[in-house]
Length: 417
Length: 139
Image 1 (cartoon, rainbow over the protein chains, first blue to last red):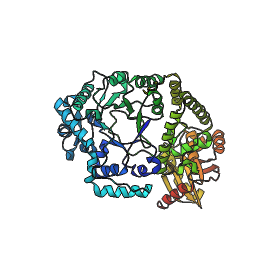
Image 2 (spheres, rainbow over the protein chains, first blue to last red):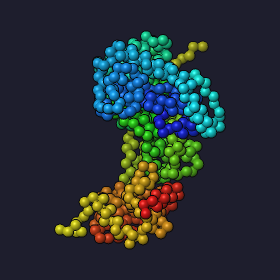
Image 3 (tube, one colour):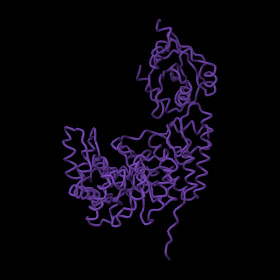
């Protein structure tokens, strides 16, 4: 399974840490950050020598924007003149509304061309940011002990994502906008190298299967999806099973990548999920229209046995009360108290643990993983009886276990001799 | 009815009653309110008494929650207390607080009583020192 790790503006040092760098496959760069800090982000990404992609974050321009941020105006520049015009003058920022009607064929052609070109030419920005890039190269060399070279024609993103908008159903006007976006992508050179993105609102979950079926064959075979408001820990067994079955039944030649996921997404590799994305200690789910809400992740400790972030003090108390919850990663094995871990150490611990989760699922049958979840649930309930007022709802552990036991795996593709 | 005879109206009110008496009761020097303690957590009242850093979680009613927070404070202060309004300190509170190594203060309009002294903790030095440094700026 491929792990995509999203870059946050406060994560630069984290992504220079060799433990983090070796723990994932692709760096995801939010379009907002790429547009708002254009030179610093390009210099950091291109000097990192990491495989990367840029999430265009186009749902930011869907519906009402009550209080536009500076990053809205920056990202709008990459989406074409109609979006820029609708945003208005940034010096007199005011509420703005993006309705599906704005996105005519002409507007979409311009937006798609602009968004795709922004990504396809991103590597060429190396020449424009050479000074900063060399500074970041130096910092990376200090952190890793390896000096890297970056040509002026730097690495392009591994995946180029089409613009996308969240839809409630196949009859939603925004779904039709998405279809027009795909049609516009097909008119560009090398459409097979453009990945479609499907964004379905939680209330339209039943439409997910049909949505996957409508992915045009001529576009890239790596397809990203986002179920807005779908939280793995909140979801009912029937909702989890629905997503599982849709992924399992999707044409195995299409590589599906969930844009927001946690440990249940790791388990979805049994269903055939090819990859999933999350932040370095955050963003395992995302609601819409809450997308404009951003900010640095709070310092939290990821408790591996519970697959859950907790405040550091609570995590330490949990582990002192139940030593079976203790982590053995490189960060934790040194006997450091969880409460004294720095933000960097918390991030490194998370990256190492997430990687270990992926390796666990790759190496064990799903029934074994289900048993581990059930055992953790029992231990947690016992801990809750011991500690006064600890407020952790671990019911998701048994829900995940139930789905893992009952759901069917996708058969492995037979490779012709 | 005089304010002194009735209970506090809020936790802030309780803290207001505590503050004038902390110096006398503990010999407190530097004192801070809502002091960052561990992670994003903040401790209601923290002060220095002698060589020790003391943390206090103040609660109107939810004493179990107070004990839980005081329990976490043990990772960063030398002694950890909960503070309840005087009539709310029951045997049940004292038993559970004792079990978790947390002291209990009873607050009234005019005094602080150490109902159950807090045992000494072994806080993480880095956190304790950070709090101590922060308190030094409070005066």
